[in-house]
Length: 286
Image (tube, rainbow, N blue to C red; front, side, top):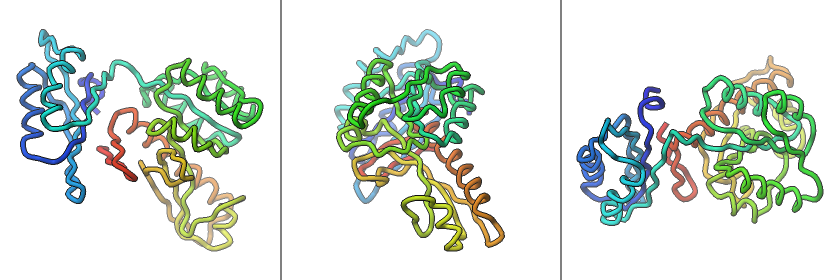
């Protein structure tokens, strides 16, 4: 998108809905010689909440630095009771990936990163197994094997995130259930991917279960991690139709492809500041 190259700043806000919000934001930017590149807004009538994302650039000589914006915009934010954040896209989000033995989502994310399609920094990959070490290190990314008990492994994750100033943890088929304490500490900063069948098949070998039941649709869901297992705010979902002629191996391949696509979209939209958590759901300006 042109926005990626031309708009170094993104304003994201949420507030009670009332007249004049869009006008106030647009007027402030115009008065400070800033040009809007992309703007999206949504009014949740049921909750009477207003959500907005504005990508903009400061024209030459305007002097609208992040610090100047924050100082100048604060009175408007206070007037409309806004929860708001200004992001500088020249500072790439720092993403850490967690993986176990299945590498398809990890391969896809790193390929997108190496190709410049995912403009983030990846300071580390962590895993409770060594299977992905060679690929990760070949890609020039430090690999950290998680050792010890589950609490010790989770402490290693939080310590590394603090040391590397990680903005987002991505569970790329990391086959461990995070503790409620860690989920709470990572609220809004941890994305998971899992299969989603109709009906749902839990436990071991879900694709074999799906094949045995003759499912017609397989899919995947990317969501934020919460203490409620697999019930966090959903960011993205996708499905693919299958039929009686497909084998278990086909279903596994289709499922992995859908998982890669869905997780990549979720991570991309999150790092582009297109996702706003609104209670148990999300607003996605995709």
